[in-house]
Image (cartoon, rainbow, N blue to C red; front, top):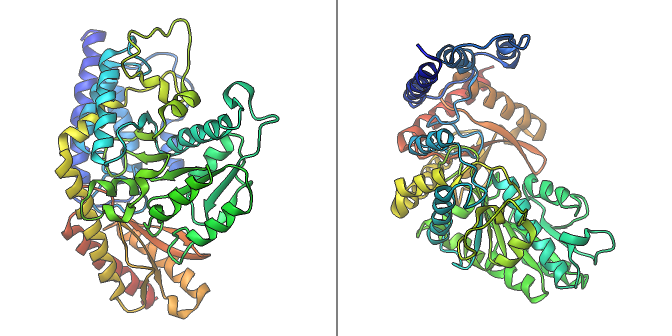
Length: 471
């Protein structure tokens, strides 16, 4: 077999092994059998002096790694907010890898640029966001938040006569950052990257489930005349709630501020006629971040930075070089909206999933996951000794075990129950902290999860809790 034939055989073997794994993992949740140390030892060693034939290395990779894979794409995986990497999106992503396109500009790949432009427009239509908005396809919500905040920083300083992209922050006018007390840590990363400081923020009080309190925000806005970047969220990571955008966005705009929304998963509720009212007013925000690899079910490495003010977006992100020619300024150039030059052609998988599911399919998936989460929460709350902290609005909820036995005992019993659930391997949940207390966090974010999976999960929780109580 020639070298070229070997490499093509490796492609075919990879497809076979991938299909085998996806059929297997669809049956039930599993936990990794091998830990980090064991997996590391299998792959470690001196740099090889000679290469290995391609089919052998693919077989070696699969056999060495498979029992250390977390079942993220399984139907009863709820530990983090993960989509299922839908097989249609995976197939499109395989083609993307095989095509080997750099998605930074039209001359580099007209197809990648054109398909990304369509995917960006479809996204705005699906989520009913202002059509004049610009969209950058990035690796995920962390970088999408960074992009939105970069646009905010540049625009608010530009209004004061300062060009931060050229002159930096030394001597720049003051900016304030106001953020809800229960914000996700990814927005703090963006503030750090941009030189705004993750600690130099004004924290806005929130209600019992994490929604920003408009009255507290109003007082903070009035405390200074410095322009403010206000960071809201759609989909609090523990409780799933969203900030009251219809109240806070006009309030911020009245002071000349900018509203950025971390909507990593919650923004997708805009696709649902039944649940979009929970996000009323979000369309007025200046920038937003969301993930494709959550509720759109794309493979990982897919996020969207959405900015209502294209000029601010491009000013913050656009890169120019003599060799980066542009065929036609009337067309959208993908590299103008992201911080990367060498970048994966992310539009293919994003387009594929929107084409595969369509408007109705995405809405149904969101509605189904929310219905399943709400049913699971209600059923768990009916188990003696189990407390659900707020019935879910979206797909997230948190649970305490033995909360009636005091804080320390509740923490211990919650940890023990989650560990037992993971050991039983019927479903997989993880822990989080809420108001200083340990909770089990449940995220229903997969198109693969069914009502039956929800029922099986509740019984797995009941069984684990009973076993922990029995000692």
